[in-house]
Image (cartoon, rainbow, N blue to C red; front, side):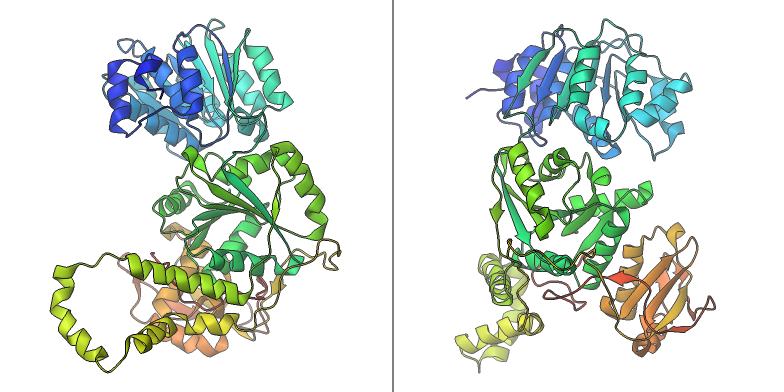
Length: 570
């Protein structure tokens, strides 16, 4: 077995990666590190996301720094702030025993004053997103004349996001004598053109096949009617009780709407898209990394650079227009050698696109059937049974209560106790799925629906209410929905459209729960401030239905309690 020691890394770096629990190099690390340690040749590395590219370029880069010279010697460009922070954190951990190595992250959405201050103190390596770095260069706040190594990480994603001109401008500020290392998951013509323009006879390394998908990912697709996509999504989530996944949408509006509908239906979900502030975005990502979110609903741009371990499923609510984006989406799962599943929920008109993706990634999709109600309930029930079977019992803490517990159950047989336990957890779940319809559509039959998969709630008359909380209180619409449900005790499916403002908001509730809302908020507080609910003076007080859109049911949980086996944590 190849070891990090055999690759030529120095002792201080070996100690740093040993502290992180690294045992053996991944294929990209094993092949790239010896080449990059020579430090005198341009390099192109093609490998899927999650294969360890940061260490592949980061370890050789750190080893060749002159720590005594506190000026930028390494420049790493990447597409998103999440990836920027991740690379920065990794480099700091790798260099733990190298001495006073300064790695500065430069990215948008954070204080530029703080970043300028850190650059002024001196940086050995600058890790940056192109837009913010150009802003700092234009201010004359950084000098790259001593840069020896320029790294373009996730080069294809940077080009997909429109950073070609920015990259050209930034690289023009670096010495022609520098060494350039380019890493990418795919090799479109634009990436090839950068290699031709900025590299001389680069060493090319491909781990896996060019533009191919990760071999550890299974690809599945489900064919449904457009209006039943959301119902299929819920069935798939319910059928996988331990799911920890990302749902991809095309638009910001769709990601927000799906997330809010999932929250109303009792799932731990939230949205990640470009309309969120940096603070809101950081909060969502913190919850996702801590796994207090079960499902993250995201757009392609917002999800780029996300590196979260143990994502089990990627679900394509809509297939991307660009086939290469499918490779990036699916690469969010099966990271670091683990396995994962990439799912596409499609209509008949998308079959051709599935075949096109198969040709690009070199792997066949499995046509799967949306599970029926019985299968979902069975999977959920036995998921809980397995948890009970494997739970760790704290003998010392439970001992004082056991005598009374035994007394309570002494008149029940083992069989009766098990039946009551299962019924307590699943009565409502079983009732909902009792007559769940078949959502599957035969491939050969063209769907007569051409709509966008959404339907109006149509659940009766609504009252519009005012609340003195808004975005300045660090609320997104999803956050406010949770707060309303938790404080009032009203289920999410009783709440209609939420209109989030700055220091206040409006929301709609069904008429029969208005009084419950008013009572629930009589003594409510948020961050030490009294929360006020009033009848809205903005337009009609009562409406014949919500103008907001929601998603059709057709099978899946629609009550406000958390899903069995997955606690709400917010």
